[in-house]
Length: 155
Image (cartoon, rainbow, N blue to C red; front, top):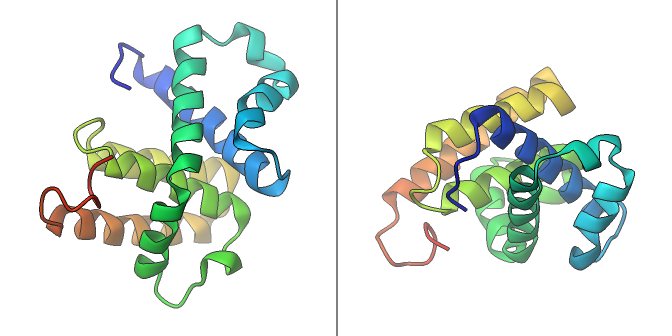
């Protein structure tokens, strides 16, 4: 997913990916329908550069494809919180960020976490920002401590 997309456009891609993930879970869309449904309903969809659309789709579909590996990691790092008790938008933010954190070397961990916090500020609550920060910091520490090649830190 390395490309020459500007930071502002990478943020736009993450916002779109987050919304696709939310639609996938709440709207019960099939993964193959997520991107198409999103761009149909997104007013600015036609004005989004192809690189941004491609990045958003890769993030959303990549996250969906790895959700069975991502969710246990979130659960292990979310003290006293069951995944199903989390707000759907917060769960989507965490899933997206964990997917990016697991892509070793793609984006620095600090950037991924900062972007997740921005998404939480935009789409959720102040309490969610603190919660997302705590969970992602625990995930980051776990991934950084994992031995190379165990499948937890890579794709």
